[in-house]
Image 1 (spheres, rainbow over the protein chains, first blue to last red):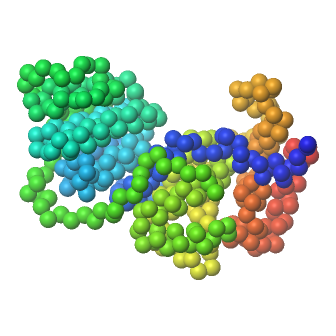
Image 2 (image 1 turned 90 degrees about the horizontal axis):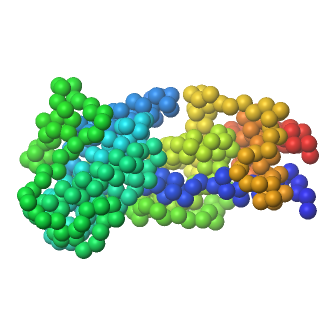
Image 3 (image 1 turned 120 degrees about the vertical axis):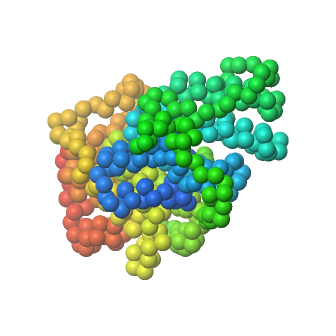
Length: 252
Length: 180
C-alpha cells in the first residue's frame, strides 16, 4: 500500500540511521552527567564565550590535555582512589580531556596517562589499602582499559601495549596481590616472580609536551603535585553519584 | 507537550541538582533531540557532537529555566536549534542540489534487501536535505516529531499563523521534490 508523504515522514523515526547509537547513548550519558556534576571551568568558559566550535575543541582539548598531563585540574582529587568521594572528579577531568582532545596523538597520550593513573591507584592500594580496595581498583583498571580501547580516534595498538606494560609493572611489585583472573589484556602469565619493585611512572608517549619551565611532563617537578598538607581543609561539594554508564532506555 | 506532568516533575528535581533526575531527562529526550539535529546536519559524527553539547548546555542552565509560559521541551529545542545554527556558522554545509537529490542512496544493501517503503523513506530523507533550513526544521518538528503548531510556535518563536503558512509551503516544496 502506497504511503502518503506525511505518513512516510512520520515513520522516518524508525530508520536505524536516525537513532542515536547505543554506544554513543551510553558513553555520552556518563560524560554529560560527569561534566554536569563537576562543571570544569574550561568547558563552561568555552560555551559562554561562544567560541567557534572547531576552535573551541582545539583550544579546550590542548588546555585540558596539558593540564592533565603536566599539572593538576583539581588538586585534591588527584590523590583519590576508587570508591572515595573525590574519585568522580578525578575521572571526570580525564573524560573531558579525552573528549576534547582534537588529535589522535593527543587522545592517545591522555589515554596512556589515564592507564598509568589506574595502575598507580592499584599500587597505592596494594601498599596501603584492604584487599577489597585492591580488587575494586583492579576492576576499575580493567574497565577503564576496555573503554579506552573503544574510544574513537585513539591509537588502539599503543593503548593496548601500555595496558600490558602497566599490568606487568604492578605484577612485579613487591606488594602485588596474586590475581585470580586474567585481565584479558595482558599477554603475560599470572603470578610473576617478583624481583623488585618496578616503579610505575606517568610516562607520556609521543608527542611529549613540556611545561613552560621546560620540565618534561610526567616528572614530579612538572606535575607540581601538592602534598596532602597543602590540600588539607579543601572542601569540594560532591553530588551523590547516579547510576552511570551503559543504561539505555527505549523512548516511550 | 507530551507527558508534560512527568517531565515537569523530573525538571523540578533536576533544578534541585538531583543527578538522577538529569539522567532521566537525558533518557527521555535524547532520541528526539538527536533526530532533530541529525536531520539538520545529516552526518552522524556531527549530530553526536552537537547533541552532547546541547545536553551539557541544558544541564548547565537548567537552574535558570523558568517554567512559567514556556514548556520545558520548547526550551530544550530552542537550545538545540541555536546550537545547530552555531554549527552552520562555523562549518561548511554540503548543498544538496535537485539533481543529486534523487541519487539512489548508498546504504550498502542490494535493492532486493530494501523494502519499497524503506527506499521511499531514503528518498524523502535525501530530499529533505535539499530544502531550505527553515522549511526543513518545520518538517522535522511537525511531521517527524509530530509537535502541534502551538508547540512549534513556542520553539521557533513565531506566531502560530506563520507556522501554518510555513508548514504548508514546506510540505508543498517537499512534495515537488519527490514528485508526489
